[in-house]
Length: 264
Image (cartoon, rainbow, N blue to C red; front, side, top):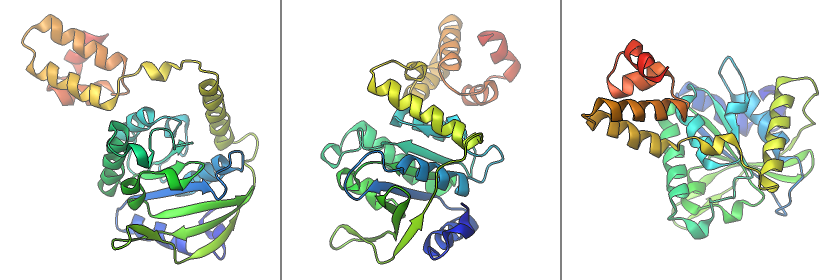
């Protein structure tokens, strides 16, 4: 499956190529028309991500998540042209909780993508529960009819009715991810994450600092006059975030060698 494999579904490749040419982002919804799970949405999301990702590494474990915090972490760290998948994304993104920090962070993230050239795929059982403002920022919608078959809609937001218009409907067929591929490994990893979450098991990633926490701690470092306290903060940031030594040293105004002496 590639862009040329969309066959009669020309609207999506056309939109994607236009966004790439204009150095813009792309936000995509994937949901089921009967709000079901287990209809292949994860496979479809990963396959779309593998098609539109423009980085050399392709789709890796860092580019998939089941929680908004992890998605925000990856979004900040990954290069332009990255495609990211938030699987079962209805958690915390409800239209009934539009004012929550999670929704605000997601709206800011999608808006940032206009500049960052990131491609975001939200995979959720029902698009009807998604925060309206967040939905308004999305560009394309794949509505799964049954396993291996979805209808694609080029979303056009109507400001008068405050509802998206879906003028184009095209069928899209897809098959399972081949065994022994990098994408299959990512799928298996994502499946394990979801199973651990359902069993209530903790994950190491949950101990990482949130992006907002990282920024707050960096600000504390910049204003800290006591060397010992500053060094403790720097060590905490480096140990519990995905910032590289170079990125952290740039953020706090230290040389990389000096930072290395502190955190190593």
